Image 1 (cartoon, helix red, strand yellow):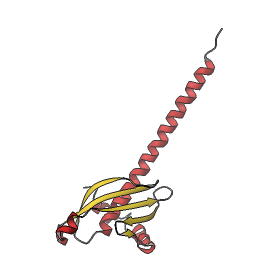
Image 2 (cartoon, rainbow, N blue to C red; image 1 turned 60 degrees about the vertical axis):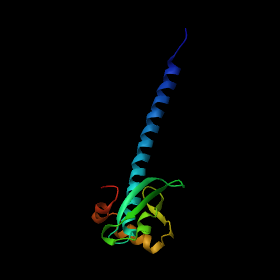
Image 3 (spheres, rainbow, N blue to C red; image 1 turned 120 degrees about the horizontal axis):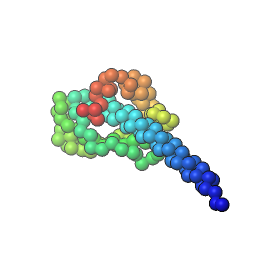
Image 4 (cartoon, rainbow, N blue to C red; image 1 turned 90 degrees about the vertical axis):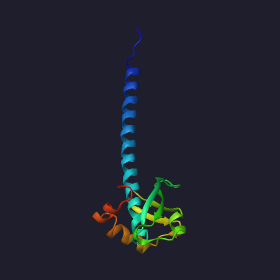
Length: 137
C-alpha cells in the first residue's frame, strides 16, 4: 500500500512557509510606507518658506533601504521665480534598522549631520510635520 502522509506533511510545511513569507512581506510593506512618510515629511522642512510642494514620485531609492521623493516647488506665498518652480528636485532618504533615518541627500548634495539630527529630533515626529506632509493632502 502506498502512503501519502509524508507528501501531505511536505505540502503543509510548504503552505505554512508561504504564509510566513507573506506575513513577513506585509511587515516590509508597512515599514516601506513609514519610511516613505518620513521622507515626504522632510521635504517641507527643506523647501523655502511659503513654497507649495507638488509631489511627482515617491518610491524606492537606488540603494536598498532608501526612499526617493521627486517633487517640484510651486509659487505659494514665497513667489518663486519660474525657473525655480519648474526645476525638478529630489530628496533621497537612507534608513538603518526600521525607520531610523541615517542620511538625507538633496539634488544639491548631502544634508549635514547636525541638520539631519535636528530634523529627526525636533521636526519629523511632530504634528506640524504631519500637517505639512505633501503626501497627506
